[in-house]
Figure (tube, rainbow, N blue to C red):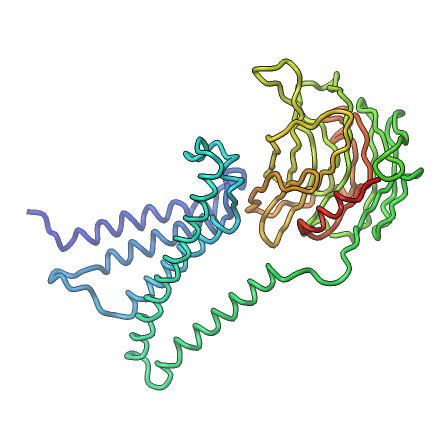
Length: 395
């Protein structure tokens, strides 16, 4: 007859072993294999390890659980890991990501059902975490009061709780507080008869190719790039920070043109700077022979594509991309309205090139043919109100 007293130890060791796998992955795996931050992957492993330890410290042979402080602290650590994982998954994702993801089993549901399910899950997890936190805090405080001499034992949980609440309030204020002070663009290219930068960076222009000219734009004049091997480079000063939050806002009008030199790339780059870029993804549909041009924002390895509409030729469209490093988020806006949002778990590197490039990514590859007007680069994350105001400024 098997020894039942050893079953919790064996099961606990198996759970601990499972937890060591994501911890090893978080330490040694390559960044390209991650769709979440390393700390989140490591927390999943830590949660399994702690759960395995709790199983091994589970009910004894007489059926009574150990009544000690270590058990309560392990429970508190598991709660913290679960809260961090659930918080990241729910705060740094959105219903729009659920609806656009092809890897979720919910993508066949109507959008309104997915949205209701998302917020129901968000509310349910929040209530569960609050309940678990209260129960764990009560248990830990009671055990501390018994183990630590008075009055320190009774005061310690209250002091720790106050510190945690203060830290949470400060982080909430930092994330949600309205921006203060001037929020002028670092680069402002109006293209009204010249290529000079009207922003604070004083970026210096350099023309490539022979088909770069001015034409009527949304506000005054715009710049036209010919597509084949025509683009504009703006050299940025060393003092301009490209490693934090970035925002791009511009008006764009494409010609009905597909690159004859690199048709297989399927991309036309509108503008690229540091880790942030805006481009058009070209595709054909099964029902129609003509091309579809989907707007895409890109930050590091993460991209967000607006699949709701194809960008029409000969029409001015306001486009904005925001990389918000504080929220680990990439957002795409068309004509002032949000059309896509993605999580950027690993902050992208700014890259060695300190250049804002308009019209391509590299020479004839990913070339764009059309006009650009009122391009602005910000070294902070624009709000939706600021983007709507930018889209409303037109002739």
